[in-house]
Image 1 (cartoon, rainbow, N blue to C red):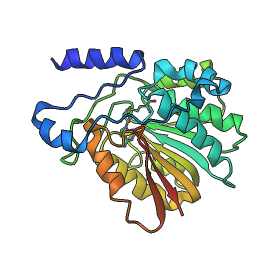
Image 2: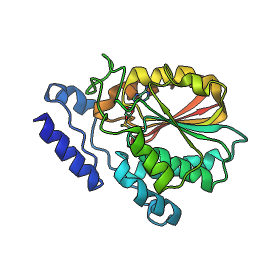
Image 3: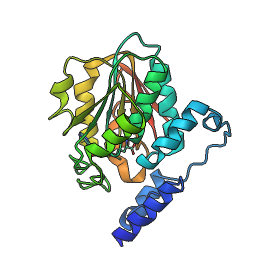
Image 4: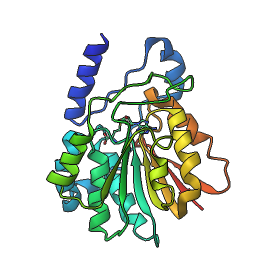
Length: 251
Ligand SMILES: C[S@@+](CC[C@H](N)C(=O)[O-])C[C@H]1O[C@@H](n2cnc3c(N)ncnc32)[C@H](O)[C@@H]1O
């Protein structure tokens, strides 16, 4: 059954649809907090942005992230070019789709910094009681070589550096002196996200942006909880975006 669900999900991704299945035991509780969301606005600039369209068509087979969030990442990288300094970093790379999209846009916007792409390449880690669906080891169907092929051979990027291992525990030391203008966290579970933010916060420049994938998804409640815990904090602005992103800006 699990295998069939996984196949349906993967097929749907290929058609541009993301399916999130709620376990039966969670149905009643989840349906109160998780309802279908259909924003009424129709403005769709991703359809007209040529640079984005060309890049998205290349990275689409290498990402689990839909066009709406990919376009927002694209525009956030552009916005981050207004900041005077800082590198970019993605934790949770899988096959490299969103990471190379960020790197491509960073180059196009003249951002001189590096783009660090961090993944265990052995799947999700640190799943725990605060998470709903993830148990650990998911998304291990990738390799460093897949990302290298996309970044260096297909996309011809020279601003990418891959950090292999658990971030920050194993690979944080490789970038301990860096400062960051943008951090994309796509790690699916609470503790991983928390450890990343604890490590990176003092290394974010003022005005620096953290963008979370998976915010509000029924199978990533740990990420939603982790972001919501930041709403009261006085040193940041926290935005709930209906597309499945949350955005935090350092004051
Ligand atoms: C949903 S996938 C990332 C999807 C990707 N951004 C894309 O474009 O489709 C989540 C990834 O996070 C990685 N991961 C989770 N926690 C991590 C951590 N603490 N350090 C490094 N990688 C991590 C997993 O190995 C997995 O490849």
